[in-house]
Length: 485
Image (tube, rainbow, N blue to C red):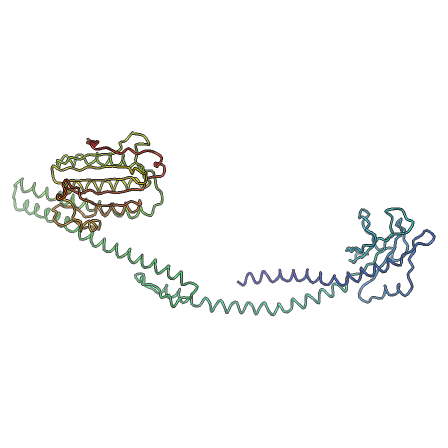
């Protein structure tokens, strides 16, 4: 705040000087105007010549000024000199005459600045446009003296007021900023793991909204860190089992070899267990990486048009060999690749994450569906053109209604199943769905009111605006197509 004050002070001095000169000129201009008007009244015509009937006392009065030099001049209608000072300059010739009106101008005489009041006087018998000229001028000593006195009266108090204002501003700001400095020191003294809220009562009232925002951020950060710690603890616990089994089977096989046992079946069984444990560990690691990637991709603002039908077809084709190994009937219902824009169910999002969502749903369905079962992937379009629907339906054991919300938590697996899963598939699905503004729901697939036959997971994506003008292809009953590699 000191810089603006120091900048405004010279500006104030300059404006004061201009105002002081204007104030000082006004009374002297009025007096000079009256003198010129009175002198013009003394102009007369004698023997067709312009004369100035000026008494000697008035002439002496005009010269009686101790501070300034006074000049006057009278010129005839032809510009001839009549009376006064010959050295006084005349107005410019192009200036129009306005008889009887006193005008003012700044001029010089012998390189000395003067103020001139002049008036054109009508002369009886003169031709039209010819007038006598009366001028009265004075130097500027009295005006400068008065302007200087006015400036002194204004500027001198400022030399006292400005330092006082600087001191008051300094003290006021120092006192006002002191609570902020104290708040800053309290925050700096905090440990890196201290995410407790800042006491709003100890903060200045002006920054209370900022402190509340910081407290809200600290609360969300604390919750995020707790969630990450809990996730890491669960991940470490889940990885211990396959890694421990892998180590145990490797040690068992090594002991058998060291003991001289050459039974191929026992070695084959140990190697099979090693492969199964390593596969489980690899699957767990891949799921953890997928979940981490999904959480990080949520901060990326770039979105693209995603043809859900093409992605679903591609994912189903990738899982056909696995479905054939388990003797599961895997099929797809919905728009196909190559049907044109009207046949595509477009949504706006990240293609990699959408594909990861579909993969986890199909993988989960194949994992829990017994041999000989059925898994169907559907892509439907809302008849009102607002959402694109993805359904993955299986003929597995189903999920109890009281556990349908729990299965979306990381590492949770439904009770009563002997499936060796990671418990991360549906957690990844919900995370990706939330990032795309989609809704996920689970329901039973019933062939009869009292009989539950499998599970249907439904994801409703908002449709891309570019696709709302096209009519989506909705499959009719019996349109189920088998996808072959």
